[in-house]
Image (tube, rainbow, N blue to C red; front, top):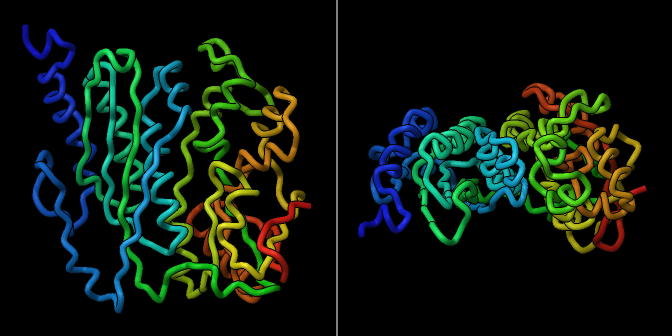
Length: 341
């Protein structure tokens, strides 16, 4: 009897590391110390000494049951982008710059090619936001997970000068809400998605005219990483007063998180076109509109609040990095909360 007979293939682990090294290498930043494969990742803090009061911000998350679609379609090279996005978008909401990222993959059986494809996606996400992939873990769990399945989670650390933290404290009546478009469902609400649509390869491979692609392609579309959009706004000299990443809980849970106790957000639902996937979901699942806005991003993945005099420059800055945005509402005096009208 040996470890391989017990279900853990050490050699497959070594092969996975070798296959992923080329992707990890492309994410390196000058601050990364040491090579790939050590017991920990080392990152120099020398650069942040330039800040007056450097403040670390962090985020951790996974991709939820969206991962089930990757299993069904046997497509594993984009789910890692989702994992990075869910972590670094939260860091960006605080005004932070992501510095480094670590991933954790738990699998029933280590299939080196599949693991390398997952990490390829993680590395791509890191490249999109400028974070270094400085470490990770692939854990083989025979008997605990089915051989063909895995789970993916991540952890990111960023930095922001304390004076540049986005806290919402400066919000006042008359400030404008600019919504930055999502790429679709992103990585939230997939437990409901899987109840509405039949989860078979045949169903996911079905082409829908209103989507312009198959259902599977639409649902697996990676989450947008908003780091560069927010950085572009800041580099334009604009003070982002508050920011909300529209994830699980949709508008009703996430928008209030950007507000202080004496202001109320008002969002106009007709200020932008809701993407067809949400209309299809609502129709096929007979889902109440309030539930949709309380579960999904409905086409807006990030909301920033800026002074009314900065709206045009804000939209120009977002468009300059290739993202789409809309004026979707405003801040009013009142009890903390959000009204969709």
